[in-house]
Length: 527
Image (cartoon, rainbow, N blue to C red):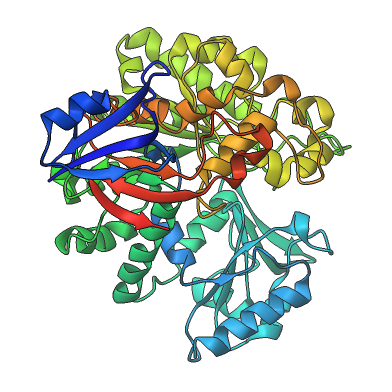
């Protein structure tokens, strides 16, 4: 099958080069250049007139949780709730609308205590008012904390005497459980919640792929793959249900088991699935006040700075495991203290293993990676992947939690750019929708929900923001030879937009619409 695209703006992302036409043959870019030359070369190609619209390489998701996006399709959405009463009503309506029998787990996703009138997390008593016959779990928008009702705690075996896992917290008040948990404690018990029916999950994965594709994304990430997802992915591969490329990062503790389960997918694609590396958590989230900071939170008279979730020894051991396995390390670091811990551990690895940088270690989120740490990031060859949409979504919260000086350095892409660091962007879906154009707008404008410009010096040009979600993201995945730009020999992963990001006023970037997404030459989404 041959297709010749022409009649619009084609940004190749190859040294800012534009082209008149692009020829695709059998899912691969065959030629890029002048329309007349390509037309003469492929007279039998299907002619696709862009009609003045804009063609780019498809966007690449540098970090998210694909299965989390699928699970969210089966959960009660709480992102728009503004108080406890609305949370109760949303959960009650979800149970009724889905005819959920007694005993079936109910999961609510996306509440944020910063957006609630009460300015605090719900409690188990509030969830008990929804139902005492359904175990209920709420998942915070960050994914780092949540709340269980009484029945859920009983089924999970959590009592007031249950020890708190290191690097986590279990809420207690006057010797009683509040239902709230965070970080390692929440993640530990969240993984014990029974999974939905496999058929429902498979259908949710189909819908999740359509969600990503609707935002122009053709490659996604499974950012923390537990062993419990092996069965789901085996079913997806067996039935060839993946249209998008999925790059998975198991936790270090289950890396060997998951590699054994998918031997054909280790560092290479098998039916659109690849094990790309291994994941580790070093701290929590700044909006949840669990990110590990070098200086205390702005309003913390007790000097509270958040806390680490891994010891130095555990981190060194994890990086050693990654090195011995030849797997890329992907480390969650939000606070600057967590970033410092990662930088120190990577530097130690490189001193004894000079080829460690060939693994292209990644720092995920890098929210408070500070300008004074950029030189070391560049020296070590670490790729920061900024969750830059935080600026709009939680920028006003960061101003309260961190003060204006530190908040202005959130997602310091401008500093990274000045140091020549090839950074990437992500949305941590399902934390936020995988809206790359909104993310590009955030990087270029840096405006909070309240209209505050947060760190104007850290703004970057549109082209560099586009590179973060195309060329640089392909490099992060070791796929720069086949993705990220439009040149002969690369995979025909394309996105068609209704306006040119390089031509519209910056404030209009988030209004650009994705019209079509093409994966290996086949349209997988059309508006």
